[in-house]
Image 1 (cartoon, rainbow, N blue to C red):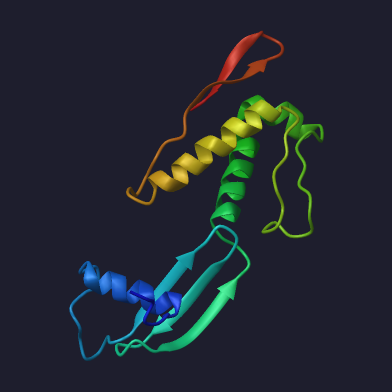
Image 2: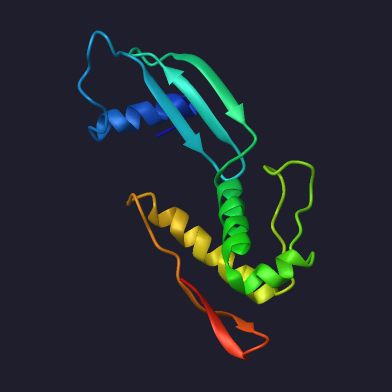
Length: 151
């Protein structure tokens, strides 16, 4: 069997939501659906009518990766184990826009663990309204020679 036809992604999303009964019952006052598609690098927002016609669609140059970068940056700024490095220029951002910049840290292993924990948190938030990020032994306190944990 061949492919009968292709449909635009927002229409496919609405059709899938209808199939799995994820949409509220049809109402004469609310016959359109707003579809938000968060991809890795971009986010698309489309308004789809009740008869499955795309009324309006817009795309923005930020997506899931941008949210993860922002979360990693937030963790770096607020974790006291990195305050010394951040205060002395070890923390930097490249690029002209906060939406296109990636956080950097001199400890590549700690940065990788922050990215893994942030990615896990974003995925966890797909099913929950809240999650905690805990990373034991993220770095060492150079003065006390004790491990620092992100909690």
